[in-house]
Amino acid sequence: MYKLAVFGNPIKHSLSPKIHTSFARQTGVRVEYAKILAPIDGFSQSAYDFINQGGNGFNITVPFKINAFNLATTHTINAQTAGAVNTIKVNGNELIGENTDGIGLVNDLTKNLGIDLHDKIVLILGAGGATRGILLPLLQQNPKRIMIANRTASKAVKLAKDFAKFGKTCGFGLEKIKDDPVDIIINATSASLGGETPDITSGVVNNAVCYDLMYGQQTPFMDWAKTNNASMVFNGLGMLVEQAAAAFEFWSEKQPDTQAVIKAIKALND
Ligand code: ATR
Image 1 (cartoon, rainbow, N blue to C red):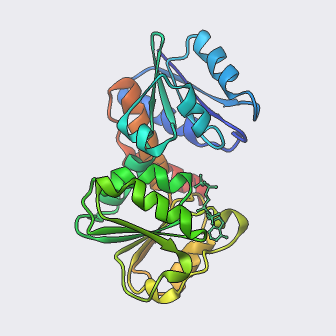
Image 2 (image 1 turned 90 degrees about the horizontal axis):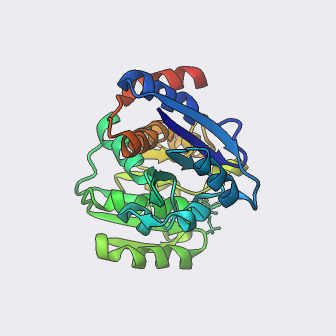
């Protein structure tokens, strides 16, 4: 039996228990998966309590991914480059920190949506934690270039520099985006939370695939992309299920089938 959980604040609406319970059913792995609301200043204590009660592993969501990075005693390369941890495996006294967000996005794009990233020009909007978390797996797909554009230009420039050793990156302010075509636009800003769309020229969309990391709703960015001739528009629901699958595999070494679960979660959200 794997004793698992997800920590967050808020956590009530998390879909993770449903997703992992489906994976468990599919793969025949016995799993007990709880939602744990940790106090804003009490993540570590909550996590240690869970470990002391026999927890084998856990997911970590907003706002604790950096706390989880600090809690982990060893880090995978994804966690190291992301500077954040969304999955921990308990291995005796060792807490292995992993970050499956980027793998989740890449698997959704390439396997579920049939979008090959090789030699493509990718524009990422935003330069916060979400962007840092997806950059390495995206660069490992060998895109032609990843452009990072952010409201605060200096943060985009810094991220581009930090990841330059993994592939071709550049960073600049949102206002510098031109009408030159790109292949894929990823909205990794938190603008949708406030019902907003990043303020950029609409000409850049020009037949691009547009992907919002947010899930569960038609976001303002998705509406904006549709209106401005995106070739395809997606939200991050597939990424949510894929990052969960990568975590499930990290714990149990069993690879679940994500398609059926994506369909079921979509139906739940519609
Ligand atoms: P996360 O962990 O979700 O990435 P974050 O680290 O706080 O959260 O980063 C939020 C990102 O969304 C930032 O890139 C932020 O831009 P700034 O660095 O200029 O603050 C971006 N963002 C938030 N609201 C935005 C808006 N209305 N328009 C454009 N960008 C926005």
